[in-house]
Amino acid sequence: MKKILLTICGLCILNACFSRDIYINPGKGNDKNIGTQNEPLKTLEEGVKRINQYSGNKPLVLKLEPGLYDVSKNLTVEYNTNFTQNTPLIIESSILPDHPDWSTDNMPIIISTSKPESAGGDLCTYSLRIETNHATVRGIKFLSNPSIYTKHFCIYRVSDTLSSLKVSQCMFLGDRDMMPIQVAVMVNGHGVEVEHCVFSNCRWAAIFFYAEGWETPVKNGSLHHCIIKDCYSGAIWTSLVDNDFQFYNNVVSNCRYFWMKNYYNESTYTIENCVISDVEVYNGEWQEGDKKIQGNYSFIEKDIIHNDKVQFVEPDVNNPFVVDKNNMHVKKSSVGYNLNAGIFK
Image (tube, rainbow, N blue to C red; front, side):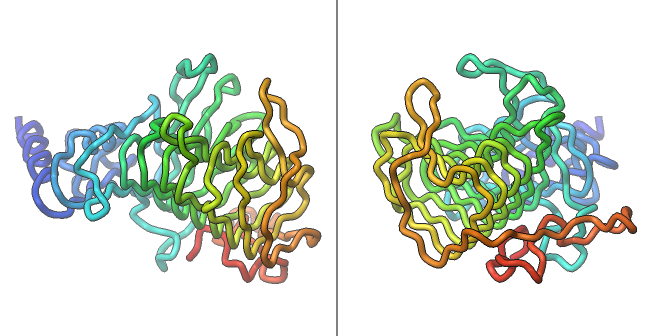
């Protein structure tokens, strides 16, 4: 009875007119707790449930404490009119990468173990489906789903009428043979910003798809200060995206396609202050029948380095249990280091 009363009390506090932080701790939490730092929830599923129940008029912040988050079902943040520019939803690590106490060990890790569900004839899983406006996901490490027969999306947005989604300081780490990530950030709608992220061994890092039933190009999209490496299909795909899309201060290395866009997309994109090296096809084009070819289009380029090889920080084989916090980031001695790409701001 005490736990029930505490839960009811917590929901009342959650909907009160002040900013609310909900803490999740997979090690010592309990989903019957009220969600404070001293009495955290246990699962991300319960955290998303609390988000979907929110009816307050102040920002809501879901704080993920260090640990492994086993997402055993596809999680969807439902549309909520209470999330606005002044009262956003934030899902973030309790210790962000720029904090002095941050290390790779205390980054919350999300792994999907959910069963695939049918979507457009394919079997799909996803970690977080964000179907509301004014949301931010920050400081989280995403892995895939162990089933190699599913297309996994880490951050997913289906609705094409939404706006304002920010993905910041996250890492997306796939494995082509064992835990493939189909697309790390797969989004429809306007106003998507992806910044200071690391994408490694994904099939695609980011796909900006379409908006408003294909009636208008996606507006106000951006991808900047990111590292995209070893993506075996490609780095970025802009299906029908306006030429106001911003792409700058990125490092792209060892990807099959650098950029893919659909054959009817007539936008011309400006790319600035980037290193783009070791790509098989620079400007790809998708045609009907799922045919991908080299496209007959170009970019407006400003300060782009193409031919120099990027060097990344790697684990020290002589000290395998000592992990440099700059692991997977550009070495100081390498081209591209001055771009400040990666999860640190």
